[in-house]
Length: 300
Picture 1: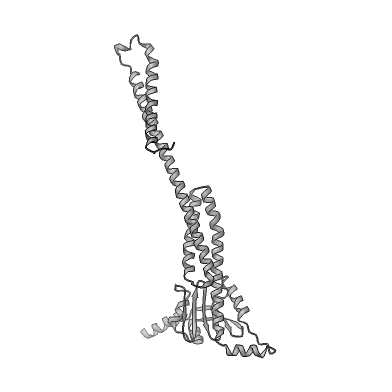
Picture 2: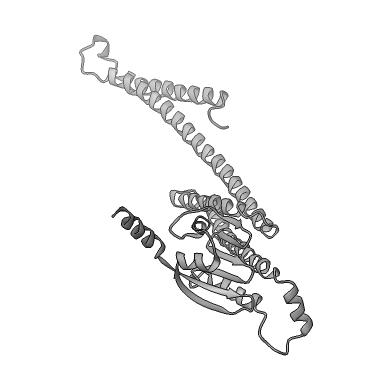
């Protein structure tokens, strides 16, 4: 019973079918809808090597080289390359279709009987060139794909940064935050491809990162400036509140309905009671502002 369950689990795990396209050295292609077991049988690949391109598993980008085949897992491209055949997974995917067209164009050698014998001889003597030519096409496709994603990110980022420097608000800040996160992820993806053709893309991402950092520094300076303005406003408000509190205190004392003897026959003092506290309150306000300006708390 236990052996039957193990066999059932094994059969179920291997019976999941995936879509493939197979190319041979003559450029002939055929669509395949097969499971892992069939791929293992055709390529003579072990299960542990096939796991690298399993769509249900998350493996990092890598190129696995064996004596009889190469397993490629880069971004959206998952392929197996042998000396005479190429197996590419998910040929109907929108990102894979251009790769399929490029393989058809560049791997095709043709069956034309009028082909130059010299060309045929060269191809026969250089059988190993097929797998390297296929690998080159895949690597160029990956570089082109990442370069296109970089251009798209540039086109979205530069206007967003310009808009942020013009108007600082939550919407623009969140937009730049999302773009910066996308930039970090794309940079990591590009750094996994150390090929000469990717240097230009990497330089673009570095330049874009520096531009974002410069914009962040500018935004921080602007935020510090706004913060300083708020501090200055707070100082003015506190000084004004203190001055008005003193004025209100004096007026409140003299306006109390208490029968003081010195309030009789001194009605002419009303205006001086109003003027002097007012003058003194203004003096307090000016003294506070002058002291704050001297200490550099507010601008000139």
